[in-house]
Length: 202
Picture (cartoon, rainbow, N blue to C red):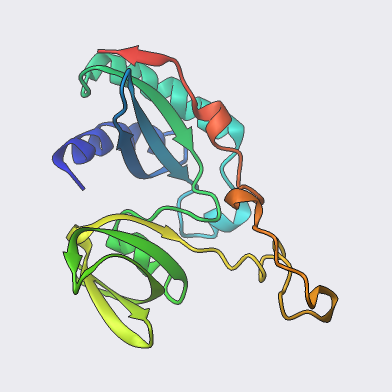
């Protein structure tokens, strides 16, 4: 996490926690004419909280209102930007070793900051987290990556197990190509539409 991301997380984390939610991580996406600051929020893990409810549109709107005012006062970002608040969805992003450890045994797609063994991208099963390293099963072998070298990471949902894509081995689907799972939108919690807040000018 960059110093700027850490600064914004430390600024906004307590505010989001006061709403009974957790700040999973931050994406800052520069673009001509104005950047996007995207916050990913979730129901805190532990004590069955994440199993009892999921992030709603109302949650996203409440966080957007609270942090918008805070960002306007603290002014941590120069230039114009748009604030978005999003639930993680099924293909949730992973930002910290603790978050990788929560999903041991699941598939993740990872982009690295610096190449490792000739790779900048990989997709494998999360095996374990030790200190600042994350171990993946990749092509039948173990591949260990320093968490600091992970640029972006997301879970890869098993769409068939979730019932959101046909089983290509099913007799009913024999000879039929399996359709794509709707751009990953099916089954996601409400996120981006209520997330778009008013543009900010710094």
